[in-house]
Picture 1 (cartoon, one colour):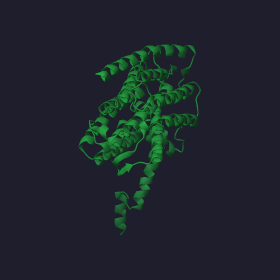
Picture 2 (cartoon, rainbow, N blue to C red):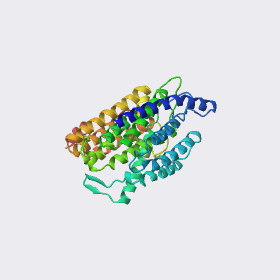
Picture 3 (tube, one colour):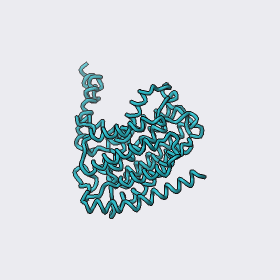
Picture 4 (cartoon, helix red, strand yellow):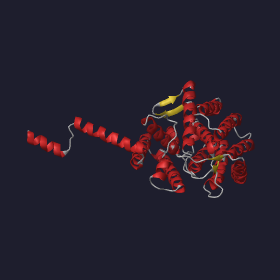
Length: 387
């Protein structure tokens, strides 16, 4: 009963706080002319207020204060400085563009606070891919890499109206259920508070008259929280899985399924940029959502709803498989989905760089056919006459 009452208070309180604060933020941003000016990569055509993530920051801080005493390992002591660091660096990046290296350094410092807490230590993968005990220094490397990857992956999907908020709501809803069933109520309630913030922000992000972007201020904070929840999920004890609808060793695959949208988009974009001999963090319009808007001619709302809906359906299917089948079929589903999506968006993308790649691959295939004597039928017939 206590959980339900607290969840309702946090849900309503965080929603109303964000909903009534964002117009004030819009007013200040417009008055100080801190608007986001569109460029050749932008998906919007008008100058738009940013810094919507400011509301996320104090919404989370107040939620953590409200939940004091509920964290078994005093996680709040580690969360507050980490969130504050990312809030400051995100705010500065929205006002004065920072280099990727500066943002990466801030992320490493923020992640270090989480890795220093015993609550997030992953001791074992419970025979996933034959891996059991994990040395502490290996956990630090894997945990740090995992969190930084998720933070940047979420940051990269914030490219069209509604997408980051919708995908964030889907991911946080999954983690809310998982932490509730595993009796980690502190994390479940934090998920609810952040979901409420994103829901209130979504109203303005999709608005035509009061539009605002979350900016790096918001995407870094939300990405960090999602990364932290993922690490905590993987660090759950075997006893915590008694009421979860999937097997213990399926947890890494379920986590990948929950994060399929940001992880797939990041892997795809980084691959394309490296193939074009560009830096992985160099900006472009090769993201999945850009392809859907530019080449499928979907509106921002349609593209965002489609991607978020896919994320929800996919993770539900994966969880069902995790409760009834072995990890092998879950791995096959993940690989098949990623390969199919990569091929689909490769076929849909008609940008100049992608057309060049298609011509290059076609030539390579033809060369390979010649080497394997798989020439066209005409060549075969002429060869036969010669014989």
